[in-house]
Amino acid sequence: MKKFKLGLFPKVLIAITLGALLGLVLPDVGVRIFKTFNVLFAQLLKFIVPLLVLGLVTPAISNLGKGAGKMLLTVIAVSYVSTICSGFFAYGSASWLFPKILEVGSLSTDAAAAKVFEPYIDLRIPPLCDILTALCLSFMIGVCCIYIKGTALKTWFDEFGAVVKLTIEKAIIPLLPFYIFTMMCEMSAAGKLAAVMGTGVKVIVTGVIVSIIFLIIQYVIAGAIAGKNPFKCLWNMLPAYLTGFSICSSSAVIPVTLECTLKNGVSEETGNFVVPLCSTVHMCGSTIKLAVTATAVAYVTGMPLTFALFANFVLMQGIAAVAAPGVMSGVLMASVGLLESILGFSPEMTALVMTIYLALDGYGPACNVTGDGGIALIIDKLFRKKVR
Image (spheres, rainbow, N blue to C red):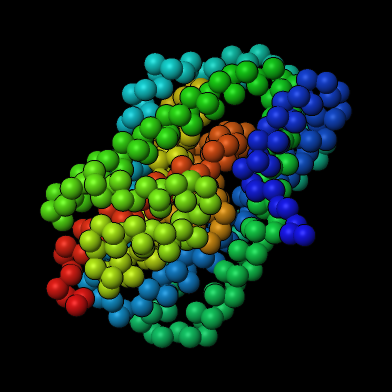
C-alpha cells in the first residue's frame, strides 16, 4: 500500500487547532518549555536565511548565462517589475482596507494585557552575515561566474545550495508546524488567540481578493500589448491557477502553465523559454501574500509602516524571491531576514506573519503561475519574429 503523507497545509491547521486548545489548559511550565523551542527555532531561522539566499540565488544567477541575450534580460526585467508592483499594489490595498476591518494595536503588549512567558534557555545563534550582505555577495559571485566561466566556483555553490535546500526541506519545513503550534499555544495561554484568529481570516480573504484583482490588471495590460482578449486569456489560465492552488508550488506546475500559455496563442519557442524562467524569477502572488500579511501584522501590533520603509522592503524582497524556487514556502523563507532587518519586526511578529502566510499557502503560487502566462503574452509579442 502507498504510504499516506500529510501535506504542510493540513499540518499547519492541526498545529493551530492543537496549540489553541492546549494553551487553555497547559500549566505555565509547559508553555515555557514550548516557548524555549520557539525562541531556539527563531534563532535557527535567522541563521539559515542568509545561507539560503547565498546558496540558491548565486547558482540561479550563474545558470542564466549570456546566451539568451535581450530576451533573457527582458523576461527578468518584466518579472521583477511585476513582482514589485504586486507588492506596492498589495500594500496600498491593505493600507486602505485594514483600518476599516482591523483594530489598530489590538495585538500590542499594552492592548493584550496578557501573561509573558520567558524561555528556560535563551540561546543566540549569530548568522554569518545579514540578508543584504548575502544578496550583494550572491549577485557579485553569480555575475562573475558567468563572465569568468568559473566552473569550479559555480560547482561549489551548486553543491552548497543543495546542502542548504536539503536543510530547509528536511529540518526547517518539517519543524514549521511545531513552531506554529508553540506560538499558538503561547498566544492561547496569554489570552491573545481570539484577536489573532479573527485577524488571520480577514487577512487571508483580503490577500485572495487582492491577488485576483492584480491578475485582472496584469492581463488587461498584457492583452493590450499583445492584442488579445485579456479575460479570455485569463480564463484559459484557470487550470494552471487551480493546479498551483492545490500543489502550492510554481515550479511543479510548469507543464500545466505551459499548456495553458500555448492555448493563449503564445508560440511554442517563447513559451518553452519564458514559463520555466518565470517560475524562477516571477513571484507576484507570493509577494502579494507576504505584503498583505506583513502590513496586517504591523497594523494590529501598533507598529507604523511607512511607504518609504515598505518600498525598501519590496525592492529587496523582489530580489530575494529568486531564492524561492524549489523550496516549499521559499518566498517566506527568503524574506524572514528582510522582515526583521528592514521592517524591524520582532521574532514574535515574524512568527505571526509565518502563521497567517502558511494558513492558506495555495493562492500565492496560483497567482504566480497565472501571472507567468501574462508575461509570456508580452514577451511573445515583442520577440516572436526573433525566436522563429
